[in-house]
Amino acid sequence: MIQRIQSIYLLIATAVSGGLIFVFDLWNNLKEEVYALDLFSKDTVLLKIIPLLFLLSAVVSFLDIFLFKNRKLQFVVGRLVILINLFLLGLLIYVSLTLPGEISISENGIGMFLPILVVLLIVLANRAIKKDEDLVKSVDRLR
Image 1 (cartoon, rainbow, N blue to C red):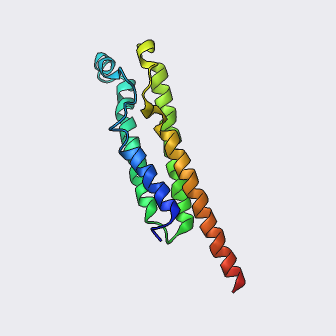
Image 2 (tube, rainbow, N blue to C red):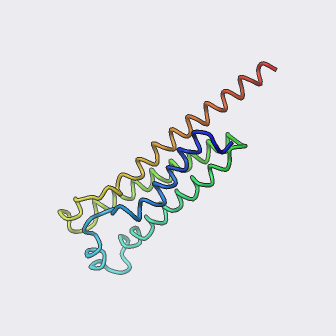
Image 3 (cartoon, helix red, strand yellow):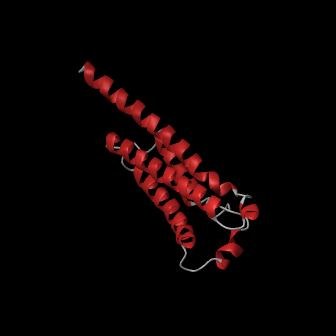
């Protein structure tokens, strides 16, 4: 059913991953330095991939809401979202440590911590999915 607690966790994770990246900055003073970089450098390519990974995480977690009939697949897709966000967190840390202008980059925005919040919400959703699966298994034993 869609009105389960894991659906609320997944919906909040979707909103955090898909919506809040447009509200909060990933870095405060990054725009001037990105234009100063070479157009084809690996750092600018990484900076273009990061928002796409945020949106991919949002889309997959939103689609995960509607997999309520197959709880095992829903659990696996939740783990996939966790892996996407851990990879995204690693990219954010790598980019923040390797971009030039160390002093101005060190003022990270709150957007750097959004993948951690999404991972926490998906872990809570997976716990609720596991609890539902255990409940169904216990009822099947009684038959």
